[in-house]
Image (tube, rainbow, N blue to C red):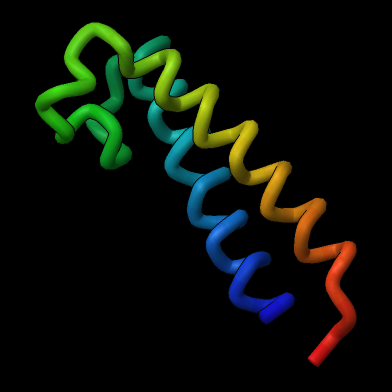
Length: 66
């Protein structure tokens, strides 16, 4: 369970960072920009993914390994 939380946290962190990188550099990477209902809210969604990633890392750290 701990490794699964860490994996989801890593994926959320990568997608949130890629979304912010897309917004500020116009590189066409990440999945946040491809979701239609987030038009205009990509920065907020990317920041929310980064916050979610840190929450998942904290939850994984509080779990026992196994």
